[in-house]
Image 1 (cartoon, rainbow, N blue to C red):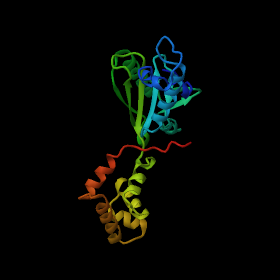
Image 2: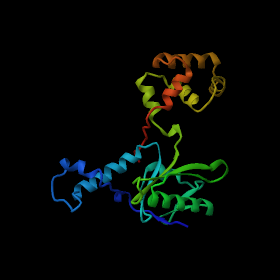
Image 3: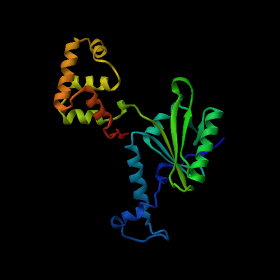
Image 4: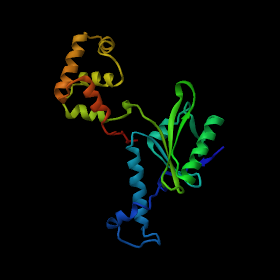
Length: 230
């Protein structure tokens, strides 16, 4: 079974990007051309950046250490998740999942191959991706977990505020995004179907959408805006 020891979040680094930060941190440099301040700042900024990504992501080094796990990755790995962290190590809960993970990480780091893994069973089955950071292999791999639910994303609320939606209209929009039909929304809210249809009409009017489908397509295309305040 592959064992991946988790390292502190501040150990994240990216030498490829660090030289771009030179103008912010004049001072002594290492042989790599990166000052200590630049490396520390870059680690902090990249760590915060990954927390804004709308899915769990883990950066894994070539020796198996987890250099960084973003906020959604840490939240996702509950007791029912196919992957878990035990005593600082990332493991598959089943022998099959552990084997798949080990093979995919090896393929990413040694041969630069991308793999999509189907882990878990039943209602908690999910798909993850293991991606090489260096396309020619070596160095590190990125483990990308299944995308989080839209309810964890602030983009809908931000969009609603910018377009002047009422709280009732926003609730209808969120229900539509969850796949509910107008009749089901009306029953759940205890209002007439005509009320929900009026609210949908207001959503279309305020956004200039020609149909519900066009409105939902716009919403699904919104970039993620994650709540990262701990």
